[in-house]
Image (cartoon, rainbow, N blue to C red):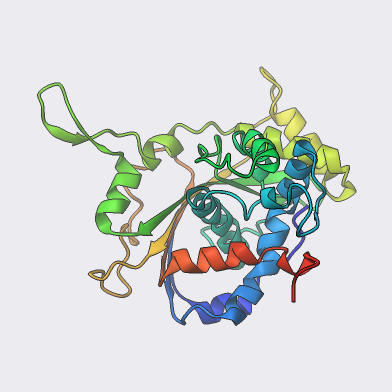
Length: 321
């Protein structure tokens, strides 16, 4: 289970925030204010380890290695998540940041969001990748991305039942230029039937607008909560079960949609200037729920990710200083 509180003091020093809420639309611009440091890595590490612990235990058991193998023991090269290809780690970083900011900042509606567990174990290609890698260190390869919702959080009523859901689309780009944002939102450039260069329309707006209220991510969350048999979330498990009965009459719970974009700050972007309109809900969004957009601009973000993920559980190695 995910039990670590977010390092809000470290985030306040690291990122300058520019929040706004207009009706059912919230926008949060976050800009890096201080340089990357060992202090920042140390502050973020417990949260990142907590977020990945469920998937780490699940994958290590599935591939047949100890949860914390010896530094020179069999399978040490296949430890999740630090052994993953860099491209995969950057994608996971974006998804994790969706949870971190949701638990750390005020969003539209000012709900008290909770993340019982991150859904990283449902990354289908990781298990066979790690299984092979633990037995043959030369079998490293790229892996395809995780299917389903990038991020899911919940609000719980006083009686323990499910009150609200937040679903997130989270994307990392090495440089978060305006062009990169447009591609993420509207899809790649393609040629139409007349040979004109147009957007494919298969970007974030397309995906989020067609997401069902009874998202499969809720079933995945329910499965994990059942496995842990956690009394704290028994009401949530029951609520999800009733909600997902096909043809049932249980009303859908309200939903907030989250779009999080994170990457390095492009040189030409003016400070305090977002890529997405912060005053008006974008016309391309048609799902009709509360919408929260988060833009995060970092300095040398790739190096931060590499150092942070390279440090996870490192102190538990017998060879660590």
